[in-house]
Length: 182
Image (cartoon, rainbow, N blue to C red):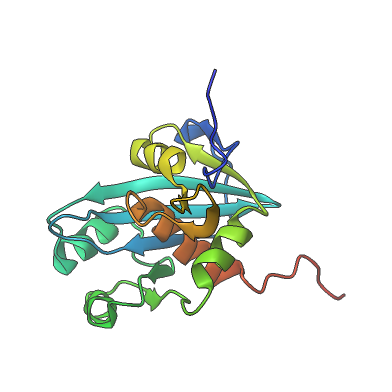
């Protein structure tokens, strides 16, 4: 039986085989850039109702922007909206020049906490094949002060999949409206 810490940010995610994901009208991509120590991450996110389905396509160090663009094209992900870490505008522009539909993720003061809060509104279903996503989900923790007080700030390591997921979800759904007017 799993033991959960009060510091753990995301609990109760489910994992199913990627082949069992439903058909989506549209999916989005989250990209966290990395190179030497940090991996480049590519996640695909599909939404059905209040369920987010997440599949890890890439988790790899040593990827140049050209390598990343080639990977996205080979897997037919380049024509989906790719929300990327907006701290790297040059990388986003290079991806665009290589026919990737790259956009800067919405970030700013409070966006990490707001993104986590938004993700908690969904039931998240990851693919069993997404091993790094699973590891990060289990080790994504709130910081703890020396006196034991848990604060609303995630520990900033082992968070590359979590960042890519936040970039995609927050950028696409932060102002979501689940109704329409006829």
